[in-house]
Image (cartoon, one colour):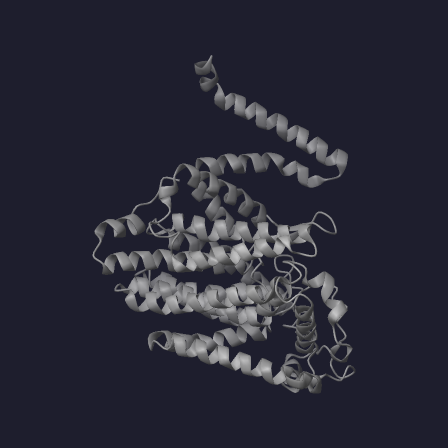
Length: 493
């Protein structure tokens, strides 16, 4: 009997999929929930993942630039198709590691960066239990979990294959480049208008900030990729791509990404001169000094804007000028929310309001003197500063944990870079360090770590750092076994 089933398994599978397909389409039209028609695709995807997890992993990377936001209801939304793929891969990874835990690089779990990442996740879970809205916070925790498992844990397994980083690059570069070209063309058709900047990005990007962030993040990877190939035409193609991406950032009119590009040569110089600790200390002291100055005797009230003069500008030049004058609506709206966060923190200083709970509660803590024309916040956006968002949602311990995590990441970036003996390892570490720097510049004026256009590259960069550190340490210690284990053995997945 078992032999007969095995012989006819292809026919049985085909009939089962056909029946499920017909039923799912009928249910979709009967209930007007048309996403049910995708059930056969989901089943095939799960089967493909169980057969070869690498296929789904690279498919996920390919879909990141192409994914769009979709709302099932007023309270339930997702990014399609990349978020369902992340969830699928999270469960597949956990299932895979239960059977083959040795496939993780030796020393990965006990690496300081990964341990701090686990502590960061643990505190999110703790504050989900103390949250003012448990359902929202546990949704947030689960979303964070599938980012970490998929892009840090699974990436560490995938990266054991020597050429995996190249496959990762091309999986994202090809669709993103095609999107950039069509965005520039559509933007040119409306005269590179500043006031209509978000239209050419739709539907693949929520706004110009999300678009500019992923474009900027990819620039260090393109710089890295040009060193992989000796063929002249490939190197020329990649160098022209750098120019295309810089042009795309320029016409995105996103000040944060301009700032990130400006910091690239500065950051490279700091890394090469071993000045990372001094730079981090200086940045931390500067932030503390500015906050202390503004908070002392409520001095921040002196900078309240004139409501009538704080407007949205149609011209980018006026937009930049008004930023320095404190009359730009987007900048002052950030201040409006940051002040609300400080009042929220006073109410719940230790545990905060819970992950994901800034938006429903911040308006009760705002100061009307800083109100702007866009304070209704129809986009339901949050704090526009990730550290302050953590203060409101996860309290002081949340900020401290993430700050320590951040400092450790960049200290290890410098340490791994200077330990590496091979130029290819140095280039790789520098590239992912720049990706992390760009991510943090964006986090200072936005909160996109949970965005599918930024978060994957942040957590992927952590995996690259850890795996490269393990490899360079093994090389330094002269342990050929560990080097082979981390860098040359590709798991059968």
